[in-house]
Image (cartoon, rainbow over all chains, first blue to last red; front, side):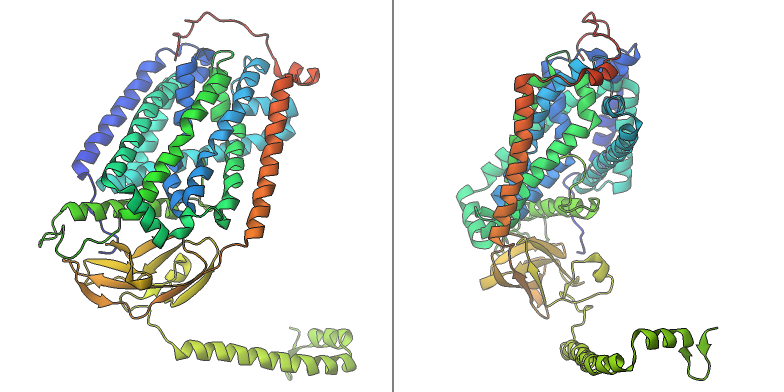
Amino acid sequence: VNGSFEPVLSPHVGYVLMTLFGIIWVGLGIWWGRKATTYEGYAVAGRNVGLAMGAATAVATWITSNTTMLAPQFALQLGVWGMLAYSTASFGLFAFAPMATRIRRVMPEGFTAVEFIRRRYGPPGGIPFLLISLFYALTWLISMAMAGGKLLEVLSAIPYEQGMTVVLTVCVLYTLFGGMFAVIGTDFIQSVIILIGLIVVVVAVLVRVDVSGVHATLSAERPMLLQVVFPAALMALFNNMLFGFGEIFHSNVWWSRAFAMRENVGSKAYLLGGMLWLPVPILAGFSGTGLSGVGDRPEPAGHGRSAGGGRTAGRHRSDSGVHHHLLLAGIEHRQPAGGDGRSAGP
Amino acid sequence: LFVNPATRTNVFARRRLARWFPPPIRHRLSGILGPVLAGLLLAIGAVETRAAEAPLDASVPLTFLSEDPGLLSEEQALTEFGPVTEGHTTLIWREDPEADGYRLLGEEGRVLYEGRFTQAFISGLPNGEHEFRVVAVDRFGQVISTGPAPVVVTVQHWDVNLAWGLFGLGAVVMASLGAVLWVGTARGVEPPRSATAKLVTEPPVSKPADQNGGEA
């Protein structure tokens, strides 16, 4: 029993889905890449991205593995404050909105954040900024691949190393072939999938869980999660907000998208993206606290369990909690060292 | 090379010691250090004696273990720890080869976790001491064995005044940042010409919408 569990999907189904998504994503990258006939087209999508695509790419870029997997952990650790604290990362998008238009106006031919810093402050500013940006981008990429590998392992028992390698390879390939066109196009599809998925999860939790029962359970077993005066959570609120500001302001992923958007689209796209992103950690966190209230409750002996240990309703319920804990444990154990276990991305 | 073979002492060290600490000071120091060292030795002995009085074999199934992976390799058993300042922790226990699952019991026998993992995440604990026990269950959910000892977790949340103080500091920082952005945007402040001269390498050129295939 030492950490073993039954995955939701069989490895066979997992491999099929992984291959299918990989082929589709790389295929889309090649397809969209045909539009990139110039360097400007490849690097900043011809500077012609409209509001819908702009807002979608902002949302998808900011919904990282941390948002869907660490936000529930924040809710479990810091309760209601944790969910709110996490959602304040959207304020970074709001704050970047006016800057996006300004960046586009000040550097109409710009491509990267490093370029701005180098021209504005010279090599003494540009070189350290380049090193920091490279380190951050590498950390971001690896943490996302790790999360993908972990998720595939949990869902379908695909070995972590295989899942991580495939995720990393597919991301690099579609970006390589399609440039910014592929990045923004796939971001749009991912936004739709993620938002629908989160709504489905929350509806499923609401349907299966008695909210008043969850409240009663939390009040009895984890009372601090519902407390207004929760010291650790109070201290986390602005810490998280500042973290979000810092990530967005410096990272080239936001600058390059600002350069890719049409003039005067940037501010609206980032504002809309922030508004769409704001409830996501709350929804993800709600699923975390909802499961914490019921996921690991025992079934009375003889109820919901078959003699052969088959998967009955009770077992499913218990397993959902196990999977949830595994996801959280995976994040906790695999995050690079940091004060609150966070890595790149909110 | 510098050790006196007769006395087995470092001659330079002895000379330095004699220069820095002449006899009167040395005697006074020895009068103070002697009792202090004796006290320390007694304290260490007491700790060792205390540990020896309550040996807990970390290899026994269902024994709570340190959550620190570094310490886990040393198989350190736990009966109490804290203070936990965030109100959450992960409890880990030794696997029971006979078990199909585990139950973690809190106060009043309340079941906080049931599953097949040998660890559980506990959060939202208020100030105070909290006792947890783990039991192993078979595939029917019947208890087949009980842990040798409970673990007592002491929770002492961060001081509320400190928390509010840092909350206020964070609010001031973020409000200041927001004000700078707001005022800058509202006034439409332009960067110095010297700066923009370096930034704007080419004048803005309006492009046809479909130059690169239109919308991304």
